[in-house]
Image (cartoon, rainbow, N blue to C red; front, side, top):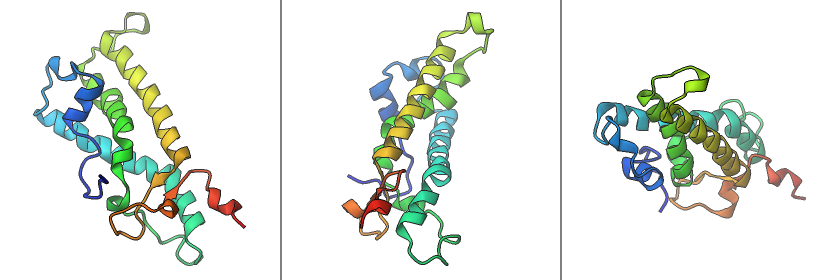
Length: 161
């Protein structure tokens, strides 16, 4: 099922699939911090898409050159379901685990610092894989993704003759 509702990219149950004990350390699934972190995760993924992918998409899809500088990405047309794993990694690595750590010197890093580093590394790999495989963007807003609505970062359509 595609996620075109503008909802968060992940939920706490998604986090628990990847890190079952994530909410056993003091910040609960219903805490205000958790809610804020989920929203920040979604916003950061959408921002990174606008920065790294949208410009390539615009150049490959829009043939009217007057539209190129004015077309903005519609967040509700991005299929956020494909970013679940990346979203969990970002949530844990950038927001949740750093909130739990004491930030000790390099040689004395605690469990949460090490886990945050691991999850950020995995996030970067996963996000790059999604970009290279093709971001699903429902340009026609019909609720389904056609093959032509899946645009990889390298813009394979430029090679089509």
